[in-house]
Image (cartoon, rainbow, N blue to C red; front, side, top):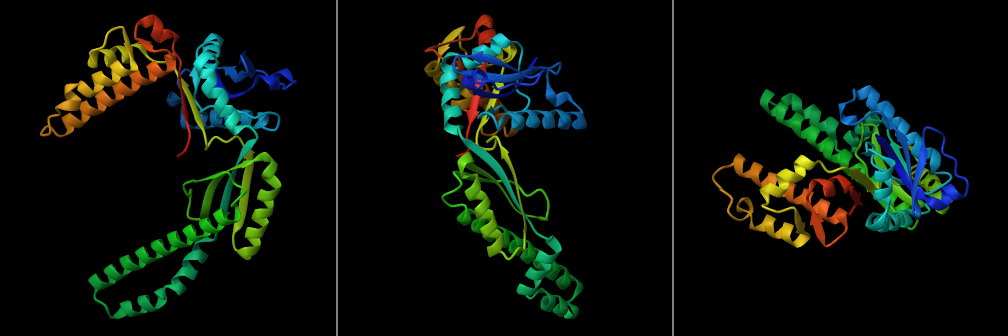
Length: 335
């Protein structure tokens, strides 16, 4: 199999960008895919530790290219079988979509911005603000049931208060980055010591302004937080490119469920979906069975729609030869 890392401009390879073996480039038109050979056919089957090693290697290779070229990162685990399939991915209608996405991100980088606090200290300060010690002192006069309810209410007050402080701090960060960041995505907090966790998209040329903003933020907060910025990284949080090969037996099942022939159109596929009995006349008394049937129908429609869009013509071919030649490419961006 061929493991895909990302897509760069063919101009970069023309200008002497060197890829260290076993990594190499597959060029088609104005774009080059950065790939390597692998014996792995499905990363989902690997043990967790081995999977993490491959993920680290994937990220390291992408990050090694970033200082020399804008790279449109592929989602980890994207695999194709041959260089010919990679060229098919980069050609014709696919290239138009990829080239536009690549140009939209040209010159942009991602920074992971984290503000850390001492969780126990934050809880202590909040407890004083909410007068929690006084509430706990009054618990001595309460019955056991009342004490349990009070303790639960105290826990809720602290949780709500911490979330409020995190939101206020995040807004302070966003205000400081106004006019510098092109986009900001909130990441999940990995542990209680993480007050703010953001992915920030900015122009590479704005890196000095970003660093200055972090210094101002540190001054405004009196050095109360440990501010960490990791990067520059490729903008993987702001665009997700995936590629996969359609499985013939899945296509056959979807085609038969929707009652379609060997050729169809997007309009025909949509009409077959909307006219299907699962869609128009669901058995509302069957509970889980109805949900399963409706979900299966929706998944089959989505699969055939993806296939049609990725064949690039008015007519979608559902025969074995056409399915084998089709590469399903998906580009997702945050709303």
